[in-house]
Image 1 (cartoon, rainbow, N blue to C red):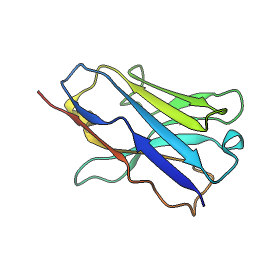
Image 2 (cartoon, rainbow, N blue to C red):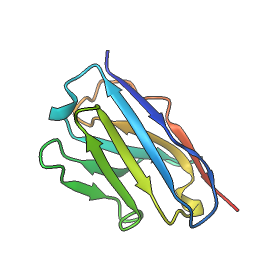
Image 3 (cartoon, one colour):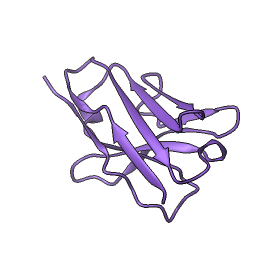
Image 4 (tube, helix red, strand yellow):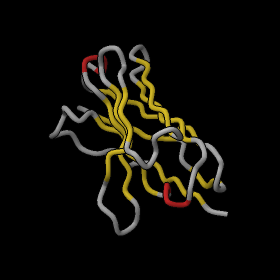
Length: 116
């Protein structure tokens, strides 16, 4: 059974940092691209960052470019999102997922709140 378990969220002041982690299981992690998404209250879920399975090339939403870094560890089946210079508009529930596994269920997500 495909499963994604996100962790690392919390409350942080503007300008602060958080490191999110996602543990994936139930599929061959190393052959799938992985992505982080987020959903803010009253808004649609949006793609934040992606990392390819091979060579680890990355892509970011314009709103987080230069502040967030996605990485993966294929030996541990984990994907990480390092978030720096956080802004109040980054407040959302963050999810990880393999976009190529369209039928897989979403994880529970991890709440990130940026507030003074």
